Image (cartoon, rainbow, N blue to C red; front, side):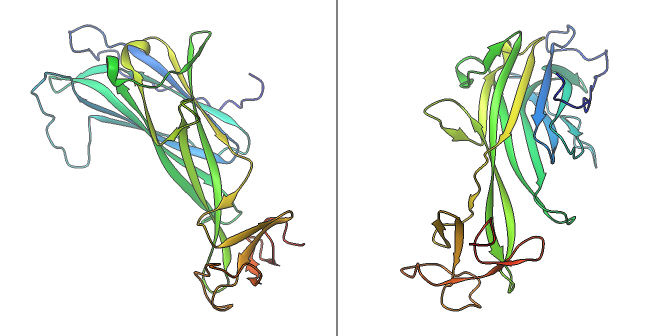
Length: 258
């Protein structure tokens, strides 16, 4: 794939890991496709297998039941890849992969602090517990997630800041969820690809703060120009200026000028 940069991280577990039945643990490959300007922290969480009564000992500063991987920001679309065991044994306790968490981060401005994030997850279930139906093709199962930028103002300068909202797309009447479930038996020796996309249209973070016009969004004045909450209420004709991330004072978002 020429459109993907080589930001592929292969994480191999020790060859000595064994599953609940004493055989070599089955694995699958998890791939995450990221838009430009995004990075991700992935955490695979393991729990004692169903019917097991063992517990993992508490260890200060260590969590043997959790594997964490992180990527870096890329200026273009990228893909990260991890090889994960579906089962393993830790301290004599048979474990199974229960879920995978994604901490998604993205930049919305040039400053170091101009970053927002959200969390989604995949639950690894058995039989009826699995509800998602990944897209199939060439041995790759695909799950899709969508992120959208939400904008708001903050502080006495009414500065624009952004919030990132991400959801899994289940395909069930276009339903969006933070977490979906996939069937464990369908993952062994396969690729599960999570494709994260970005909705082009930005929306206000809260309702009744902005009024939409053909050129963009205007910030309601509220009770005064100093009113930081500034709900529109019944007044949709009086507005206030705000500060863009680049320092400009504007009256309409995102075009700035009417």
